Length: 307
Ligand SMILES: *[C@@H]1O[C@H](CO)[C@@H](O)[C@H](O)[C@H]1NC(C)=O
Ligand SMILES: *[C@@H]1O[C@H](CO)[C@@H](O)[C@H](O)[C@H]1NC(C)=O
Ligand SMILES: *[C@@H]1O[C@H](CO)[C@@H](O)[C@H](O)[C@H]1NC(C)=O
Ligand SMILES: *[C@@H]1O[C@H](CO)[C@@H](O)[C@H](O)[C@H]1NC(C)=O
Ligand SMILES: *[C@@H]1O[C@H](CO)[C@@H](O)[C@H](O)[C@H]1NC(C)=O
Ligand SMILES: [Zn+2]
Image (cartoon, rainbow, N blue to C red; front, top):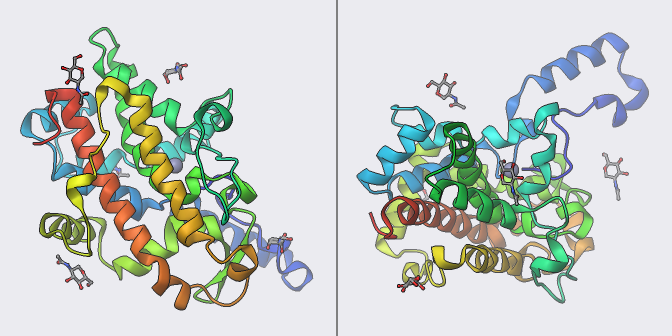
């Protein structure tokens, strides 16, 4: 999901002349062998969203998903939730890169907005992708391979849509805003995909982090008004549903992610007071994404949101 971040960074670009050529090669190989570096709502975010969705799908829906994916294992949705982030970096999958985000051309923090005609772009975006892959799954005539890809894309893109910086054009969705987090030099997009989520999960697996969030959804903890999370959610208008979700996520760019402006996040270490002030946004957005993904799949396969 990271818009412009690369899978592995050549350390020579940051620490120029000090490293020997051999050490550089070894370091690059080591960095490139760590899969986490490539991804967004990193793997943890996507897998957590998938696990939450799994606890909201009906048995009919679960069977349909397993059948399409050809999987019987307990983590059937989490298993495919990060595939799209690998696929986009392959030569055959490069066309799908724009589908991970919508570049809202607004002006945070003073003004946030998403306008489909202004922001989606001719090569598509997360919103057109959710509309397209939903209609493919609803169409009895779709081929098995088309449905297989549609399922994997939908599970991933509904997650991506809930990460505020996947609904923002400014500085390539924050990829070009350098920040420090827990002593590491990274960028604003990346910390919202990964570091903030990892700090929140505090070492828990995706499955147990999802159990915690699902329990909070059921209890209505954290001030969550869960009854409103499916307002406007309808297969009669998949476009307006996805736009509603995108606008909500984009609003957090103004209210939280960049509320004090770009200069403010370029200073200091964001794992301290910035994390404390804004982690609840990452938490509610992961919970909402999982809850909505489950309800959306129920709608597709049973016509009802509840399992
Ligand atoms: C998905 O499950 C298959 C086995 O069915 C396994 O080989 C593969 O490593 C899993 N992938 C992920 C990303 O969990
Ligand atoms: C819908 O998805 C299919 C399969 O990925 C793709 O071939 C097609 O171009 C997409 N259509 C639109 C309108 O995005
Ligand atoms: C951000 O960091 C990158 C790589 O470390 C560097 O090339 C770039 O100049 C930095 N950008 C700004 C605006 O400081
Ligand atoms: C979720 O985890 C947090 C942090 O560890 C904890 O305070 C909270 O009580 C847990 N919530 C539930 C519903 O288990
Ligand atoms: C969707 O359309 C159907 C048929 O027109 C209608 O019965 C139903 O109430 C609509 N549902 C929503 C949520 O708008
Ligand atoms: Zn993505």
